[in-house]
Length: 262
Image (cartoon, rainbow, N blue to C red; front, side):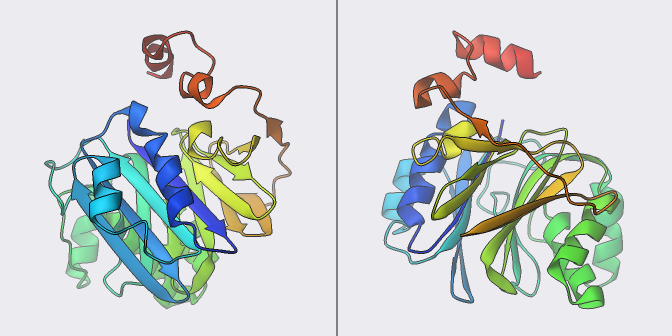
């Protein structure tokens, strides 16, 4: 399974992002990548191989950014290459996105976007999403509206996290049939595939349900249904486990957890 981690805060979050994505290594992966937003500058780095080597040798830990997303990939569409590694960006470089799941109508969407002049650099299904966001931002000039339009076009399963130069202090995320949750800290807000993305920093979690999306800022968050666009009031779940138990979601062994999630 792929791992998603995202952090938005007041100060540099590269170390926090590293700790979170390293805690997701148990999910299995063949490549990893990160996108960091420093004011309106978007830095995207990705490569095949291990998380710790990538962050340290790629100088990611010294990179500056108050908003960021990271991803560990287990290849489904496309070979294990740097080009096929998340995050993916739009043609204009305004959106960076990570994704877990399978977009079943991606060939149809890709053909249409290619015909409109969008350039693709990977073999993946995921890459259609940032291009759709770019397309609909150009139409609506509003990131949230572009996101909602895109989510309602996608078919298949997805958990996504997006950052944008249009809103450098926010993370946009959504899910359908792929796990996603928020971590609510005092000065940090998180999104992750599971609790391990943020359990070292907060044990206050919000479970995102199917057809919901969220917008995170350092000091606020909102959750809505992307079919109706109505706001959803979500309870905060207090995580009682430690980080090692959280990796198994309360199961005594990883194997049982993996079987349950199939």
